[in-house]
Every structure is written in structure tokens, then in C-alpha cells.
Image 1: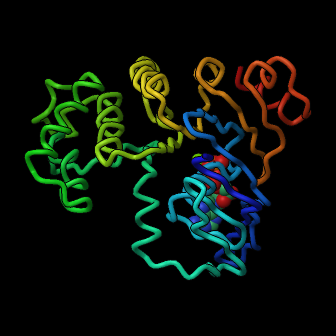
Image 2 (image 1 turned 135 degrees about the vertical axis):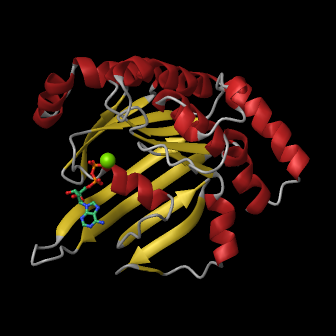
Length: 258
Ligand code: ADP
Ligand code: MG
């Protein structure tokens, strides 16, 4: 079963203030199989975030197909989903997709425990006790059991991002999307977040990760995808991409970051 599959996803932003339209996604076709870790790399402005966000309906696509766990959820033409699916049906599939952002996006006035319990209790209708127990387990998993009653502002960036990962996991997703999860962190805090992600990958989580951490991609990814100006220019196993990129643009990009 493929966990994520997109076929010819296209998206154009129509510029404000006289700026012309900007084609941000040009026929993006990508498949992420079960338990695969796929890393998307590419320069700023390539459309990486827009692509990730479109998988979660945070961004509407103009055309193309999006499958989650082999179920066709979006078949869009001219910005309209031609499928007649109910909101519940779409939400039911999208709840399988967790997302972690560059900015940690924790609720600042809620404790770590409350951050972890909110969605399970209110969206999934999990019983409070069960949600609390699950939150405890997840905090142990990301090494933050001692921070259960802390507020986000009392945590380092790395700790906040680990909480954000635990919070996404609290919904028991089967797919995790990461959008540059370590880009906002001080260098010395990057490792602790990558370690949590590595352990998730080892545990068999399906992951789609936008990152500039080439070491992580090389070590963990099954497949690396190079995006440039809204298109996938090259994709392949990291050993191949990093040592023998076929595309000149890929080579230039890798030279600039490695
Ligand atoms: P990346 O994550 O690869 O840096 P993004 O997906 O964030 O790229 O952005 C791709 C392009 O789309 C950029 O040129 C960006 O300025 C533009 N863009 C992103 N969001 C919007 C928006 N809401 N409205 C208009 N343009 C946008
Ligand atoms: Mg981005």
C-alpha cells in the first residue's frame, strides 16, 4: 500500500499588488510507500512547503490527484475537487497525516501535557485518562517526561520541537510530514530533534521530510527528491543522489549545501 501518492499536482499563486501569477507546483507526482522515509530537498522558494501543505489541505491545489493510503481524496480540476466525498470521509483520512512545522506552533498558554491532550480529547474524543496516559508515554519517548507541566516558553527550541512531534504523534497518525523541523533551531539543538525523528523512522513510521540536513537524509532516507522551481528534477536513493547527481541543478544545489 502506498501511504501518499500524488499525480500531477499543480498550484499557481495569483500575485497580489500587480505581481503576476506564480506557478509553484508543476505536475508534482510522488509516491511514499509504507514505512518509507522520503526527504525533499531544494532551494528556498522551490515549492516544498506548499507541496507538503497541499497534502494536508492547508493549501488548495488547482489540479491533480492526491491519494492517502491508496484512497483517492482529491481529484482536482480548476481548483475544484471533482470527487463527491463528504467532509467526514476526507477528515477521516487526513487524521492519519500528522505534521510538524519549522515554527513549533505549540499553544503558548497551555502546558506540555495540555498541548498533547487537546486534539485527542476534542477531535478524536479520546477519554481524558487515556489521553493523559498516552501523552505521558509520548513524552517519555521524546525524552521530556520531566517537562510535562512546563509551558512552551520555559523550554528550549529543541525541547519545544520534540513536544510538537509528540503532539502530532498523540493523534496516532500513520504518516508524518515534517517541514524543515530543525531550521529554526540553534545548531547545538538540531541533533536532539533529528534523533527523535531517527527513532521514529526506525520504529517504522512513514515520513515525508523537507530538510536541509543532508546528513540525516543520507543516513535515514530511502529516497531523496530534489525540487526546483516547482518541479521534481531528480529523485533516487541518497547514495546515488549525493554521490552522482544526474541533473546539473541538483549538483549545484548539493555543492552549495554539502
Ligand atoms: P519552499 O518551502 O520550497 O521555500 P514555498 O512553498 O514556501 O517554497 O513557496 C514557493 C513559492 O510560492 C515562493 O516563491 C513563495 O513566495 C510563494 N508563496 C508561498 N505561499 C504563498 C502565498 N500564500 N501567496 C503567494 N505566494 C506564495
Ligand atoms: Mg518552506
